[in-house]
Image 1 (cartoon, rainbow, N blue to C red):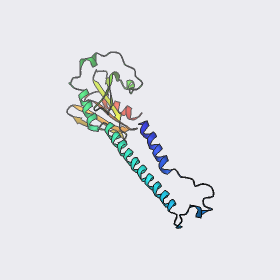
Image 2: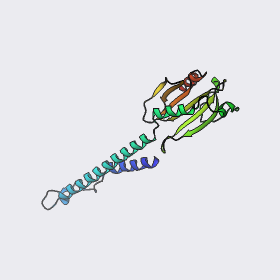
Image 3: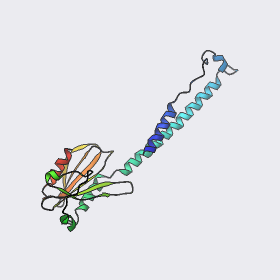
Image 4: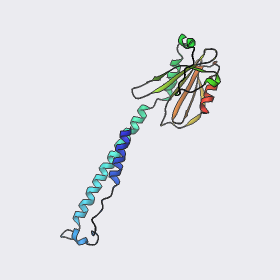
Amino acid sequence: MAFFYTRLNAQIQQAFQTTDEPAGASAHPAAHASPTGHGTGRHRHGARRAGRLGKTLAALIMLLVTASGWLAATQVSPQSLNNAAVMALWPNPPPAQYSAASPTRTDVSAPDLSAIGLRLVDQRVLAPSPFQRARECVYLNGDNQPVVVLSTLALLASAQPQWAARRIGEIRLLTWTAQRQRYVVAGDARTHGLMRAADAMTMY
């Protein structure tokens, strides 16, 4: 991505740079005129500059289209993130290793939900496609019930800082978008601490 912006900056500078005329050029216009007095040399120079500008602008448009396509390809859709949250809770009840996990794992990159009684027991990076990434964190409440938190970049999504709830069978999903990130908090609808987790995270 850094290469793209470097190239884009160089293209813009090339497109809008000016060519200084030599000193005294305006004082002796006849010296630059053609024998017929129509200044065809100057016209040819202007045509060449216009042609170069047109090619540069076309290249810029192609770069912007390519960048937009790349950004779209890297964004995990809301439906894909919801599906990942549901799969993280499957089968129901969840895998035994979650309930057997005893120590609270510490990771500065994971949301700290210990204040509301949730301890981090597992986390991983999901790759729905070769260009897409999402982070999955699994917490357990005091009853060893899992609460799953997923997040992913959402550079093209509009902000929706207040979470919204939906149900898929017995699973409740709490979703929102803030600070260019899309979030999903998921768990059984009767899990204690589920909505408190979403409340705590939207206050960050």
